[in-house]
Length: 435
Image 1 (spheres, rainbow, N blue to C red):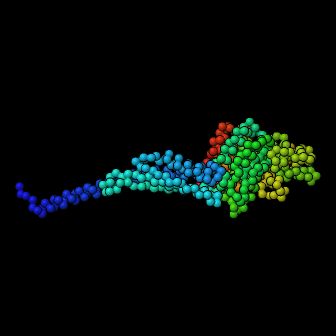
Image 2 (cartoon, rainbow, N blue to C red):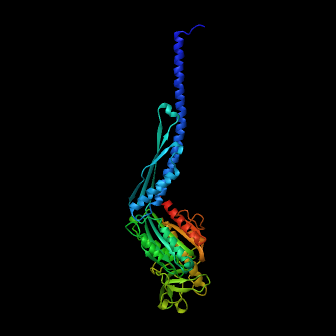
Image 3 (cartoon, one colour):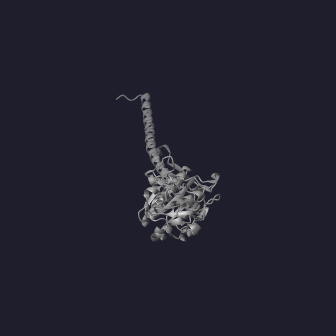
């Protein structure tokens, strides 16, 4: 055999070197594809973990009465959720969660969560790369909140009143006593503000509010309009420049409204500024009830609604606070027919219908102003009306849904055992839209 010439031998050696270099290059390309894919999956999982941690921290930041306690609660929740969603060793990675930052500023809470995962490389090691650090960050801003909590304290609550108060107090634990403004209203035959919302300073006194609820008694009729009037007045007491970005009314009841207060005209140029109750369109009306007390009847010429103390006509407007008020119609209000007549069964029918119409108009006015209304209905002894509460909240399934207004949430509690989950749902929805 003829031996290779020196030139051919050199060419064969060069081909071997080129082949080796090509194999290394191909290994690098394959390694890049494999390791890049692993890094992509790790990055996606890491993003999801820090996102869930930030959301959990935003929910937990309400726990505690000081900013230090709330910060610690938020950081612990972030850590728990991060490690639950990104376990050590996932895709052979080593995760590291940085200490979450919690900043309180002008009623808003900004929570930032960041983490890394060091992932060992496989085929890219042939190119001298041993590992890669994947990073992810997430920031959640919890908006400032102005909220009025409105509680039905009518007589029909009697069998479940203790549980109602306990669940109402638990509901308040979901809100920050240092950053959220909360006011408390309750209503029966009349309505009253128990704890006014703060108009400049942020936060609320949660222990005092919970004690107030615990000591609250029940009894009387159901005057939705006065409960909503008090809530609206409280929200409007905050100057425009100082209002929170999220304004909410949470309204809880177990029955249909049956009382409407106004300045009623009597014979002899007399008036009674109080409430009249009609439990049905054919019931015998009762009253007059003091509109700013839970369940007190008026005296003198206003201690009954019959004979010469009966109203001569239905008031045109809801004007119990000021005889000259013309904002909310009574006569001619919708959707139920209300006329001026008070003879025979007309008084009962018109009072019964107006008791539902006026709160619907008030709720619509608040929604026009950007207020979210959340309603909770407990089925029980109070002649429950789910559609009325849906319409007040303006839920998408409400019969009179208006897509140009804010849309809240309605929760139905079929029994007292469903009350706590309903309160939790409302709190969760409020926190969701506050982010």
